Length: 542
Image 1: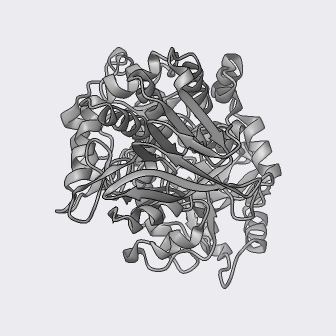
Image 2: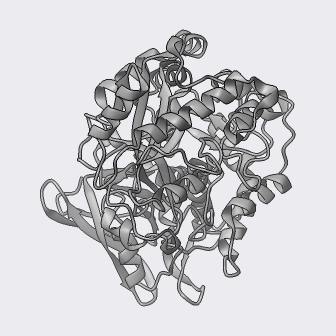
C-alpha cells in the first residue's frame, strides 16, 4: 500500500460484496486495472452474501429439467410482475427484471458453475404466493455450502484469474466523498478507519457497490418506512450488513444521482435475538415452520387467512406490522421444529455450510435436533413447556408493552386446529392444512413438511413458542441505473464515470423487484449487475 494513501486505477469499486467482486472479475476479463475499496476486514470479504443461505433463482436450468419442471422466461416474468406490482414510472426496473429472467442461465448460472459452485439436486419452491401466483414452479436453487461456498468459489477464481495482478484490494477503507471534474466523476476519497488517515483514489470510472440502507442505520429504515403500513415497529431487528448505512446513497444523491423506491424494503417476519450478536438489535432470520400456528402478540391466530411461510413474505410482514404490538408468535412443538425449522443464514445451517452429506441426510430423515437445541439455548425468544397452560404463562413473561396473552383464546384456537387434523384430510376446512397438503405434493417440500401434525400432541412435546420480530434485511430501492449500471439523474441522463450495482442500485434500475421478491433474486441480481457494469465500462453489451 502506498504511504501517501493515493491510489490510481482504471476503475474504483467502493464495496467488496458479491456485486463488487462480480464487477471486478468482469473488468479483469477485459484487461482493466481495478481497485476495490472495502470498508470491512479481509475475513468478511464478500459481504452479506457470504452469510446467506445461498439460494439463487434461475429460469430453466438443467436441474429443473431433470426434475420435469417446465420453466421459461415468459412465465418467470409474469410471476415477477405479480409480486413486483410495478408502477407506471418503473421503466428501468421492468427492463432489469426482463433481463434477469431472460439471461439468468448464461450470465449467472453458467458463470457460477464455471467457478465450481454446486447446487443441490432438488430445486426449492419459495414464495408461492397467497392471493396470486408468486413462483408458479420451483426456482430456488440452493448452493451446496451456502452463500459462504459461493463467495469462496468466486474469490478463488478471482485469485486464479490470469489478470489478478491488475487487482488491488484495500480493506478498512471508508469511502465518503466522490471527486468530480466537470460533469464526470473521476475518483473518490475517504478515511482508513483504523488509523484515521485520509486516502484519495483516482479512476476513469467509479462503481458504487456499498449495499443498501437496511443494516447499519435503522433510523434510515424508519424514515423510509412504507407509509401504507403505518409506523415502523418499535422493536425492529437488523439482519443486514453492519455497514449497510446508506452513506454513499447520500453522496451520490448530492452529485445528482436519482434515488428511487427507497420505501420499498424486504423485511422478514420471523426475526429473533441470538446470544452471539455483535449489537443488541442484530437478529437471525428464521425460515418459518409451515406447520406452526402464527399468532399475534395476544396469542390470537392470524386470520381469516392464516399466516404461513413459503407463501408471501411481504404479506406476512404487512399483517404483523398492522397489529398494535407489531410482533408475533409462532406456536409449534418439538416434532415440527426438528423437521421444519431452519435459519436463513450459513452459520446455523452447519450441514449445508460445511458440506456434510451424511449429517444433512440424517437431519432430513430424523430432524435437525441440534439446530433446535441451539436456538432454544442461544435465543431469548424461544419458550419451551410441557402443557398449553404452562406455555401461555411463559409467553406472557416475555410479552412486551401492553400486550398480554389471552390464554383461553389461544388454547381454543390450537384445539380447533388440532380437531380438524383429527377429522382427517377429506374434511379439512382450514387454509393452512389445505396448503400443507399442496406443499407435500412436491417432493422437495414433502421431506421437510410434517404430515398434518397437531400442536398439542403428547407424542410431539415439548411445546415451543417463538417470539418473532420484523427483521430488516434488504433495500429494494436505491440508485437509479440504466442497463449498463450507469447512474442516472432525475432527467434519466447518465452521470459520466459513475455506476451502481447490487443492492446499492436496488439490485438494478433503482428497484428491480418492485414491492416484492420471488426470493433468490438478490444474489443473482448482484452478479447480474456487477457483470453488466464491467461490460459497460469495457464498451461491451450484455
